[in-house]
Length: 125
View: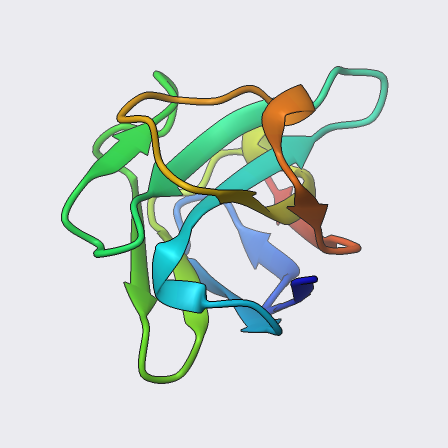
């Protein structure tokens, strides 16, 4: 069983930056495919970024490429999401999610095995 706790959300002006963290406990962290999803009000949950257990492979949603960076520290059991050049449309609850194993491709939200409770990011104009 893997427990996930997100932190780092808050209010930021458009163009600013935030770094989200997700601390994991339980399980073997280095074997888990870690992901970030987000859900804006009235919208479906969408994939933001994913990183393989080794950290060597990363994936990004189309709107995040070039602005967001996912990374992980397996010694600390933490995954990060650095978000730069934030836009109002990035406002959402951001969720950390984990999937046992890595298949080499993006997995939708229904394929995740564990979820955090989310952290709210609000980008003001």
